[in-house]
Amino acid sequence: MNINATLIGQAIAFAVFVWFCMKFVWPPLLGAIEERQKMIADGLEASDQAEKDLAVAQAQAAEQLKEAKAQAADIIEQAKKRANVLVDEETQRGHSEREKIIAQGYAEIDAERNRAKEDLRKQVSALAIAGAEKILAREIDKDAQADIVAKLVDEL
Amino acid sequence: MASEYTTTEYIQHHLTNAVMCTTENGIAFNKACSDAGFWSWHIDTLLWSIGLGVLFLWVFTNAARKATTGVPTKGQAFIEMTIEFVNSNVKETFHGKNALIAPLALTIFVWVLLMNLMDLVPVDILPSIAGFIGSSAFGMDPHDVYMKAVPTTDLNLTFALALGVFFLIIYYSIKIKGISGFVKELTLQPFNHWAFIPVNFILESVTLIARPLSLALRLFGNLYASELIFILIATLGLWQLPLHFPWAVFHILVLPLQAFIFMMLTIVYLSLAHEDH
Image 1: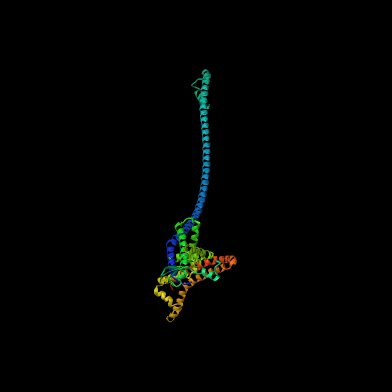
Image 2: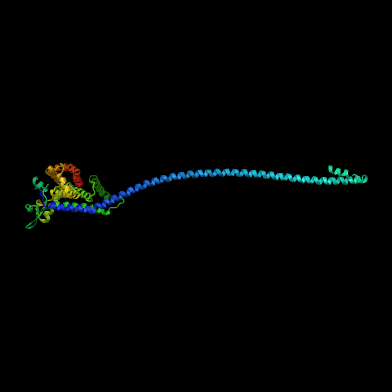
């Protein structure tokens, strides 16, 4: 239990061990630990960020979906209105076309009938005159009774 | 317990270091060194302490070389746990910037712990092996072969550690505060008046010197006492069987605690040395 040169030997060994530990053991091990801690912290932060991003993206998607639905409903509404207008217009046009065609038909029929009437009257009058001529040729002077004949023709 | 010993001889044999010295006739051992004075060496203490120190550095250097920042292996995780433990203790106590403190604390903790753990090796194994080797290889009387395998029961070792720490305390005190600052700290505290300088100096010197002294003696005393009890228990014949176990279990607590205290006080003393008043 006496103090002797062992003290010096131990002190040297102690110094060498501490020096070695400081040089070759501590820095790489602590470096690795701190590096890993940083990596883990970064990873956690990134996952937090990703979660936030995901929430934002989901909200955006929902918003866009809502907008798209509204637009689609709008477009369908407009298309329906337009279709109704078109159908109305076409019906309207069809009606007026029909009226016109019918009116034309009536007009043509009228004109035809008038002309036929005229023709008929002329022929009847001619016939009447011819008949009257034949009757009168026997008993009436054609020139003296011309005014009566004309009057007759007019009355027809 | 070897039967040819008396109990006193047995205990003395287990508490004696193997000594080596140089005399006029060349290298001599043990009893031949009784008057070699200071220049004799405890070869068992040196052998075991340096062996364990090299073991510590070998294991940790291996881990450091293979250290990855990815998923650590179980071995690396264990080493890193030790590093983290020491690092957190250093960070809590020492607030300056110093690349030496943490490796110093790690070396002290692991090395002292390993040396303390030698206490749990049954007390007869290593001396018997040494005696066998001594008698069969060198033709010595096994009674004259000594092997005290717990280096921390040797005052030389605990004082070497404590003086190393003491040297660092002085070095950093002067480095941080300058010589004048260090002298002022020794002479103008706790009573800041010129008339009190001698009183202050005595008080502060005692405080300063008590630090390495208490460090060395605490570790030595604890380990020497526990080793002594282990040896005493070993002299009890059959009764040693139930007694060894609780004493060893108790030392699972005591041995790391002593290593931890040595490390912690080193950190505290060095952080005090860094504080500028």
